[in-house]
Length: 281
Image 1 (cartoon, rainbow, N blue to C red):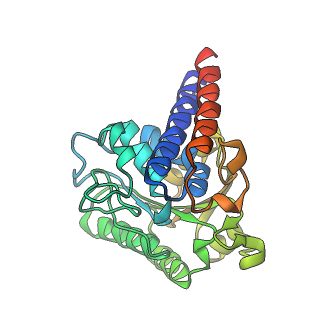
Image 2 (cartoon, helix red, strand yellow; image 1 turned 60 degrees about the vertical axis):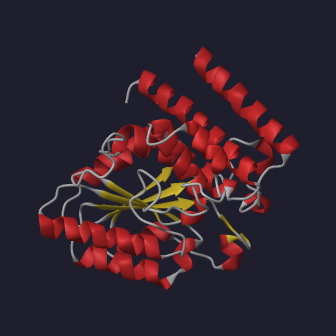
């Protein structure tokens, strides 16, 4: 990746974070913390990795992305809007009656959403099924899914991982956002997940453990995923929940609540300052 490409992705990631704040503030509800921790990964996916076309969102040969931690829909919606799947202004309709941007992704309403998710553990299962179907059909698309580190407490997640390894789904990439916090507190205290990378390897995955806010590291992991044959690929990304908004960072309080007017102004001022700095570089 060139310096210019990296800087462009950093600028886009700030805009995705702005979209997260816009949506949750307008809705007076939502999940900003985990959306912000995943913003860099979502930016890379939609602007570098995924073979998708906003003008043809149902193309059968497209790559698929499943947001298994569906409550972080504000992050997905911001990335989709910035990529051109729908208007940026739509973000302000988050969770409103009649809006196509509901609190959890709906594949029947929202352009670019490949699977309706929200019940934790089910998204990764659907993604593994998509990857298996693609293999049977001879479709060379790749399937990506993003999970939370709290979500992997669900047993269904590991059933899906076992299936992916059993069927040698080397077109399947499972990304785990390890930000260390879930709705009830630190994951290490609620249900310690231990060495996630070691567990994935034990289930038959090739695994990379990365800084989830480093675009070069993200790119290297995806390149390795494409080179891996005969087994699924796992990315354990270490992130900061709420990254980009100072008062939300590493705070479990911001798992599932929206900023008020004053908090919105503070967040947008910080993000605008960050964007201005990046644009000056």
